[in-house]
Length: 395
Image (cartoon, rainbow, N blue to C red; front, side, top):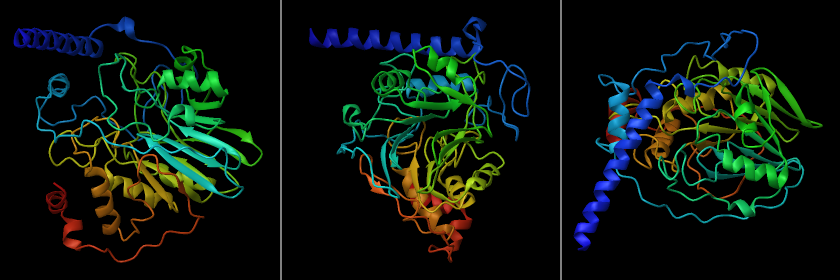
């Protein structure tokens, strides 16, 4: 009897899974009524009057895997019919209880998970792309599930003063979390154009700015909305109706750079962020870059090798690698991103302790700014030159 019940439940689960796949494909390919207008304004070098775009060019509709259609790729991903390495079902985390604030001049950062970081500086508590939900999906409990619990319990957060939201993908714009933060703390929420419309739908107020615009938080602290290289969508047909960005936060204790979610693009944007002053702390993504064996990056997601180039371009003093170890969004193994990061930092002659693996939930005191100097590579140059050799070491 139990076996029969198990088969029935398995069959129901299969039917539901195929229904979800059909719904996802339909959303991506068919109904224009799911399109939304989030922003209207004058045309610019990255807005054509209807949609935003990367001025350095991109083919972001191509399949992540050469030789396969995007629809077949999505179906195989949802069905698990691929060769992706196994991930742990659950990763143990020791959550921390942050201080209410930190002394003047000090900067403390705690990686909560994915692209969410709590930064405490100059009497302010800042969150980047906050997500405390268990799923990054429009259809919870379906979709990518959190493998690693938040490094800080929501109720243990100090009062949040500032939130930056880079774009509208579900793993970065988590409306339930934003609503909880708004109802509890009324923080200043800064995002890029069009995203304020989506956030307002949750009953939350935000300030939406264009690249190059800025807003003062308090004397000496200013948020600049800066360029990166990505795309946006909540439903497929609303693609690029809202904008994406990185952020540079100026403070008397040193600048903070948050890359958001990004590909490499023309790689001029890290240099542009430096014009606001030396960067004491950078938050740079290193995960969700592999969708077939051997892939090192995608057009809109950097891998560890390009993350090192971003770190070098920013001339940052210290960086935390983000966008890995929380939600399974691609095909690399759980610990591939930080292992690759260490290798490519040493290939670049940069100190891995300035940009290396961090533990979720472990608060760090960010060192005072000091220029990062290059030395000779601390690894066999042949491995650095030959990506296939590096991959063999890491697989």
